[in-house]
Length: 222
Image (cartoon, rainbow, N blue to C red; front, side, top):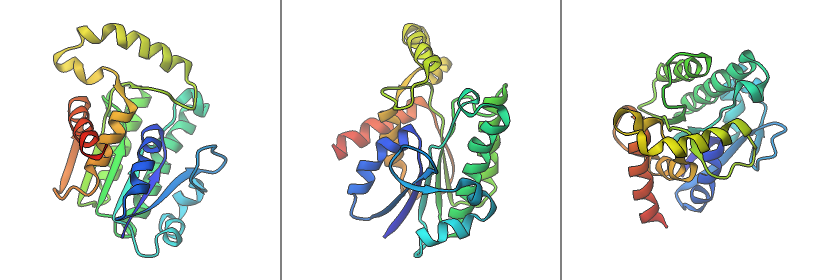
């Protein structure tokens, strides 16, 4: 049976019901201690120090695929340093533990523009690069535009951003289409479609590909 630890974020939470229903999946959803989200609560500080030791008891038969949709903002974390701890160090701890336990595939959600200017995008680029050095057979980098839909955690600035993007969407064609808003459930469906794909290498998925994969997966699984 496959074992897929999922470090939760918005899209990961939307993927969980489908994953849990699959007979070929032995699923454990990982959440941070103190989180209100349902899942196995993990001390991510300890995970950073001893990745395989923390994940090992949860996956005695090893890991096939690991997914991380973990992320925060400077505002929510309280500082750039605290955000980097979550968006880089915690994710790297998960990826390192999964790789040590045999995972061949890692699916990582970052952001459109990862590696670009500004602390947020530089952090996203840094974690993509760090995970890329761990030796996974397949690395899928999910780079959506602004996620839209219902989120349990209210982020007022994101709500404003969603409204602005909705107005600008008709004008954002060609190379700017990657920055348009995309439903979180579409991204979740695309992640489901990528799980277990046999092709090796590094694969980057932006809005157009996520919509294509997400829509196709929804039509076959729903």
